[in-house]
Image (tube, rainbow, N blue to C red; front, side):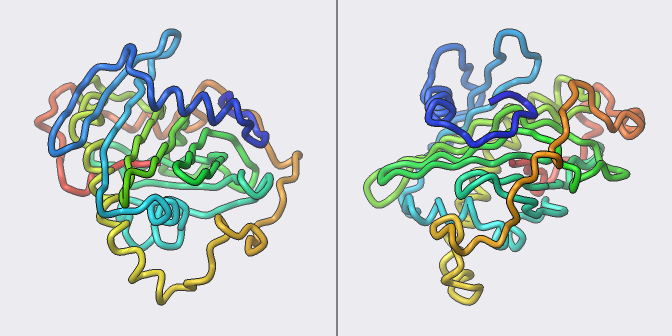
Length: 269
């Protein structure tokens, strides 16, 4: 699916994501520790690097991971980098449009995204991915740089009582970021993402048992209260970031020693 394209995802879109998650050609190994591998790749015709994280969770079932990655209410309780998150509308039972803003590590400015999310479930695997769209109910906000999710998502497979997780992300954060900060995304931030997701999965059942335990619209679409998409509310996505004034204020030097690293600098979509 193209940047800004709004339509229900088709079988070919999910197969494209699956092939990307399983592919080995052109990927460079950037990190390999404690069962987690991080790869990067630059696709022809694009300057935005692809990041792929591959790991296994022996103590998290496929169905549990599916719930965790879908449950936006739960994410508000464990993702301390999330500033705001809400669903705007739905195309159908397997495609919706939502807003997400994130707290970025200093000295970066915070980012926000408007994306269409699409998902597909089978007995032994599932895929959830998103890409940037524009919607009139999510206008630009002062102090935030509007990024583009070219393609980001999860391919998760059943392995015994656990699961394997492949996270693929091609995100243009906009702004003017030095090479060292882009490289840090692969070697530092990406592994923290899967660690955070794993910890969240282990706490989900206890949390859900006291927070609307029977409410799971991703399993039972009839529960959804999201309004249907109105085509006139969708706007085109330009190649240039509309937050130019904010980008001019984001000045990041070439010296990584001036970067305030912390355990909270996790960026995930």
